Image (cartoon, rainbow, N blue to C red; front, side):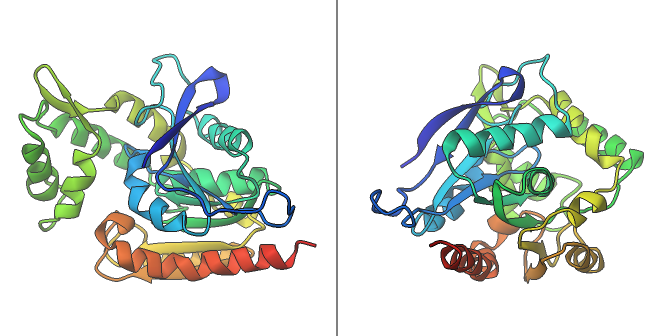
Length: 295
């Protein structure tokens, strides 16, 4: 099951939110008997459906909603829309309030993780916990932005078939160090069929605009302002190094650390069982603490 819920983001941008499983039944007559909310935020170029498998097991005990962020998935991609950090954070804030999820756990991958901890710093009343998956707090710099621009230009679009998409992103892409079928599947999920072949559902220029506001700055200050429990998760072969991840845990007032073996940047796609094992104890602890605090 996939149920779509429309959300209005900042500036009137229409956002698509998705539930991929039925939330557990609760007794509405009991104020304390409330299903804990989870909002899942994908990374740059991602989409809500990348969280489908995670959302399904989460829905056994939580109301889990995944958001197509502005410019991504089935959400609006207006050329005039803002692609600032503030816009992404405000959209997530609007989603929490309109969906009635707060206080929620935010689970973010890459750019979505940055949005999660920035929102937790801005609105601690809405956030009960944060899971940060493979996102760096340090500045990446102008060279990184140029590399991404060149990388987008290297894509052999349109792709003739989805099999070609899987092969290029899983094997032929110069950024791939060794064959990675999960990476091929990840990018196949963000393609749609056009008259001349398969193209991404997003506009690469909008992705670069989305990336620009955060690659030039470090984000340690916002981490230090996150008062709720926070879990930093990295794949052993991901983009977030162990030393930086552990420093992020130190800076976070209530930080914890987990790593997933045999996983790269796409931790939840590379090793879904390892990903679940890494985050489920944290979610259980946050839920137990919330239950203990209710009358």
